[in-house]
Image 1 (cartoon, one colour):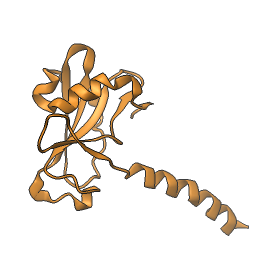
Image 2 (image 1 turned 135 degrees about the horizontal axis):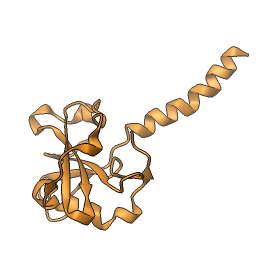
Image 3 (image 1 turned 45 degrees about the vertical axis):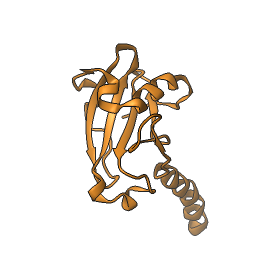
Image 4 (image 1 turned 135 degrees about the vertical axis):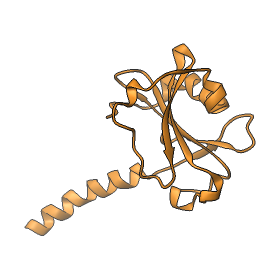
Length: 135
């Protein structure tokens, strides 16, 4: 009986783990080498900030396949209404989550200056992005 319970509980956990590593790197419109992760992009329910990650290089799958020579993957929060962005750090292997107190980071002017055309696209698509309660 215990094996059945463990097996039944393991299936949803495996499904969640698989969903968490899903990545869909899209070339930002009008860019030649800047990609954004469509599956990672979401709206923080409590603040309305868009959280996303971008990278330069050639998108070829999960982090373990993203060569270090292509540069880090950058994580941003976007305040679309104010046209400001927040730097949430770099990720080299896919293990970095949102830093503690990330909502209190300094906001910097001009989303497109940092995130490029992907930032504009994400702000325009904000209503269709998943709205989640982020840590």
